[in-house]
Length: 188
Image (cartoon, rainbow, N blue to C red; front, side, top):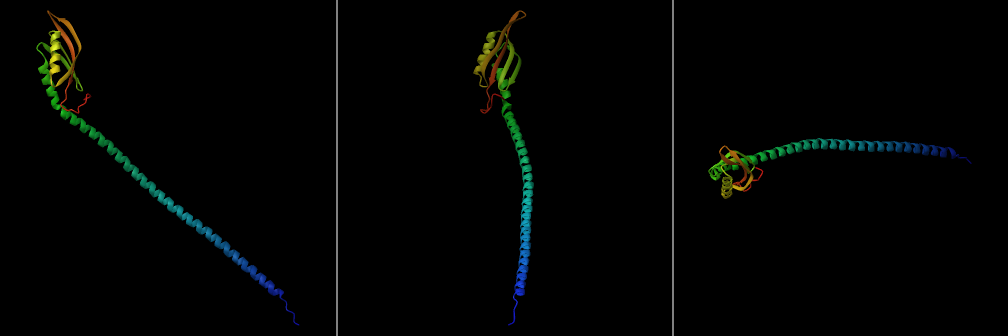
C-alpha cells in the first residue's frame, strides 16, 4: 500500500498559518500606528483650531477694552462738560441777583451809616462799616430783616470809638441774600 506522508502538508499548513498570522500581526500593528497617528493628527488639528479661536477672541477682547476705555473717557468728559454747563446756568440765573443786592443794600442803609467793605461768600454777605451810633446799626438790621432780598441779619461786632469830637460805631453785620432761584444752594 502506498504510504502517504501527511507531515509535510501539515508543516506547510502550519507555515502558512504562521505566515498569515505574521501578516495579520503586521497589518494590525500598521493599523494601530495609523489609528494613533490619525488620532494625534485630529487632536493636533483641534488644538490648533482652538488656539486660533482663542487668539481671535483675545484680539477682539483687546479691541473691545480699547473701545470701553474710550467710552469711559468720553463719559468723564461729558460729566465735566455737564458740570460746567450747570455752573454757567447757575451764573446766568444769578446775574440779576447782584443788581438786586446792590439796589437793596442802598435801600436798607439808613442815613448816617457808611460801608467800608462788603464781602460775599456764596449767599452770605458780610458788611463792614461805620455808623454815627449803634442805633443806626439796629435800624440797618431792622430794614434788612424787612427786605425781600436780604434776610437773617446778625451782628458780629459793634464797637464804639471816638473819632475826633464825635463818637462812631464800627460794625460788622452778616446777612443772607435771598435767591430768586428756589434751587440755589447756600454754597453758591
